[in-house]
Length: 221
Length: 286
Image (cartoon, rainbow over all chains, first blue to last red; front, side, top):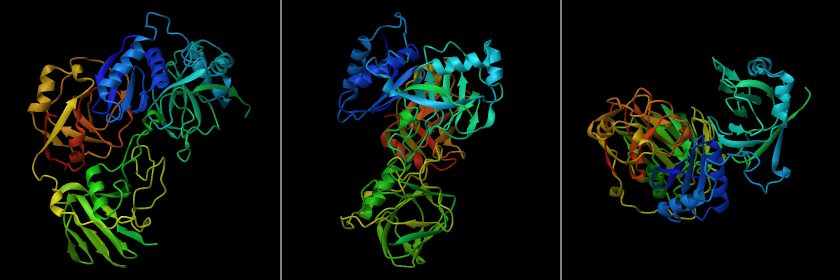
C-alpha cells in the first residue's frame, strides 16, 4: 500500500493512508514489527500517528521501517477485506470482547425506519457483526467500531442531544460505539450496556481499545 | 505527616506533575504542568525528582499554610512571594516552619507559578500521574479553599545548592517561538504560511491548558473542506475554519479536525505556558 509521511515534530510521524481499511492494516503490520523505541500508535480515520523515542529510534529509521512495512501490505486496489477478521488472523474467538446490550434505545425504531429495515433486523445485524475498534474519538475510551458485516450508513441526529447517558450504545455513519460517560452527542441511541467502558483505576482502562475485536449480545431488561 | 492547607487558590490552582504519556490511543492526552521546565526546576531546588507533583498556580492571589516544617520553591511566573509576611526570593529553595503562611501576589512576569514542596504533593495517581487533565476530567480535582494537600515522604537526596542565576524569569515584552513544519502546511496559501512568520500575534484572553489562542491576521486555506480528525502532538498549531490559530497544549483533545500548519518546537513550548493575555508572539523557523 502507498502511504504519505507527514511531519509531526521531533518525536512522531503522521502517516496518511488512502482510507480507514489501510490505516487498520498498517496499524496491525506496524504493531507486529515494532522495533525498540516505538512509544505509541494513535490511529484515526485516515492517519496513524507513530510516536517514537528519537534517542532510541531516530525518525529517519522509523520512517524507513514504516515505508518497508507499508510496501509489504496489499495496495488499496486489492479488496480492502474484512476490517475486523483479517486484522489479525491468529486471533481467536477468545480475544473477542462481548458487550451485553439491552436494545431499545430512544432512536432504535426511527433509525431502523430510516435504514428501511425492521428494528429486529437492525438489532440482528448489530449482534451478528464482528466489530473492530478502529480508533478513539472525542472522549477517553469512546471507541469508533467498524465491521465488514455492517451494511448501514447511519445519519447523525440533526440536533445533537445535550446529554447522552453513560452506557448508551449508539450508531453514526459506518460506526458503532458506546458512551463511556455522560456527554453531549449526536449519535443515534439503539440500546444501553452495563459494561464498564472506562475505568481510570484499571491497567486496561478502555474496554474499546484500538484493534480490539468486539461483539454485542442482546440481553433482556 | 506534614500537609499544606490551601486558604485561597487564586484564579485556578491545579496539582500537576510531568503528565501521563502513552494513553493517547485511548483518548487521553499527556496533560502535566504546562511549564514543564519550571516544575522540574522547582523540584530540583528542593531535592525532589523532576516529576514530583507540585501546584500550578494561575496568576496568583494564592495563600496556603504549612502544617509542619517543609522546604519549598516557586518557579515559572515571576512575582512577589511572602512567607510569614517576609519576602521570599523566586527560584530559590526556602524553609517554611509549622504554621507559616505562603502568599503569592499576582505574577508580574509570566502567568503560571509552579510551587514544589519537598516530598511532592501526594494525591492519588490516575493512570500513573497526579496531573489534573482539565479537558478529560482526570486526576486530582482543582484545588478549592480549605483543601488539605498531603505531602509525600522526603526524598533521599538533600536540598541542593543551586545558583539562582541559572534560571531567568519569563520575558516582559514579546516572545519569539521556534516552529517546526506542520503536517498540513500544504492546506494553506503561500501567503498564509508567510504571514505566520512575518506578522505579530497576540495571546488571546481565552487561552487555557487546552490551547493558546492567537489573535492576528486570518490564515487563508488553499485546500477547502474538512479534514478527518487526526492525532496531534503538543504544540501543534491548528487553524480554525475562520483562519485563527491555536497552539494545542497539554490538555488538548487527542485528535482534531482542523489542519495543523506548524508545530511549536519542544524547546519553545514551556514559554507558551507563561504567555499573558495580550502579550505579543512572533514565530521563527526552529
